Amino acid sequence: METDVKRRILLQGSLTAGAIGVAVAAGLLAPGRVLAAWPDKAFAAKGLPEMLQELLGDSNAEESNDINIKAPDIAENGAVVPVTVSTNIAGAESISVVAINNPAPLVASYNLGEGTEGFVSTRIKMGKSGDVVAVVKAGGKLYSAKKGVKVTIGGCGG
Amino acid sequence: MASNSIKIRAKLQDDVTTVKALMTHPMETGSRKDKDGQLIPAHFIKELTCEAGGKTLLTAFWSGGVSKNPYLSFKFKGGKAGEMLKLSWTDNLGESASEEAEIS
Image (cartoon, rainbow over all chains, first blue to last red; front, side, top):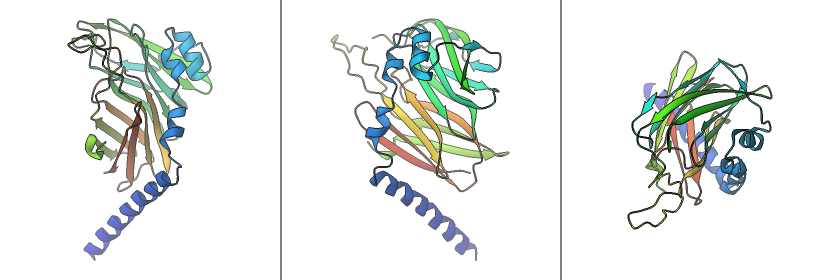
């Protein structure tokens, strides 16, 4: 009986894997299509308003206390700065992480699926000290929060 | 690229599944120079997706500003124990990798 149950789970697992494989083969998850969505203009933008316009279709972000950025006050190594963004804003659709003083300020942008909580954690590079800005899109509006991080050794130079 | 370049864990607790992933990737910005002063070509993960139960949980667009050997963590509701979760990425050179993990 016990082995039967285990076998069933195993079978289910391999079926799921198989289905995804078929989807890839059928071109449903083709890398080409995926890459086309990468917002190159937003990643090239130097200023926050321009970047947000390209990325999220709005250049204004309202400051919000419902966004919490967890990052070190002083980062000894700018190549690895742990940044966690969490928000209580209902219906958050996306979270973007910006290091204002970086040569390419937009570091990462996350689109949250249905059921995904307003929480992302990544390690980012920071060229020099400056604000880390988190922008959350919810209900067609943009909200932002920032936190200053002091970098003692830059992570973007050679 | 080898599929073992991603380590992924998904843990379910009180209806919230916490996903933690660690990838092996150089994440070169393209503006760094090597010892001889030559620019090191850009090589970074551009897009990453995570899906489970036929739904896309998270799509990420990254630049070279994400640290080498990237770490990513996020949370979602509605995951079931035993369900498979899949994470895949594509980089600027067209390389890709994916890995699956069972929600536990």
